[in-house]
Image (cartoon, rainbow, N blue to C red; front, side, top):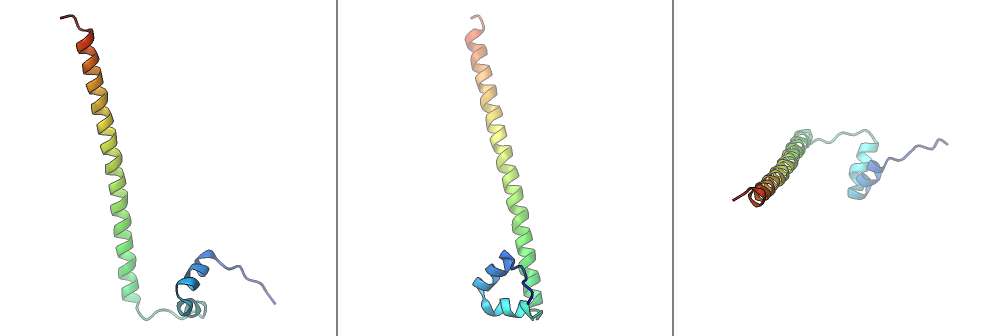
Length: 83
């Protein structure tokens, strides 16, 4: 009797839908390949949007900090400059 390693993704698939896990373990492909491909593409699009959102958020924080630094420098110069 050979022991095989059970992957965590298999456990997740089993917990989500035991029948889908059984079909997959038997090598039977889903008949809804178009729907699966569409869902995969939607996930990829969402991932790209989240990446862009994160980059824009980082840029916004950088610009805010740069503006605050420039405002602080300007304020210090006004205090130091002779009247």
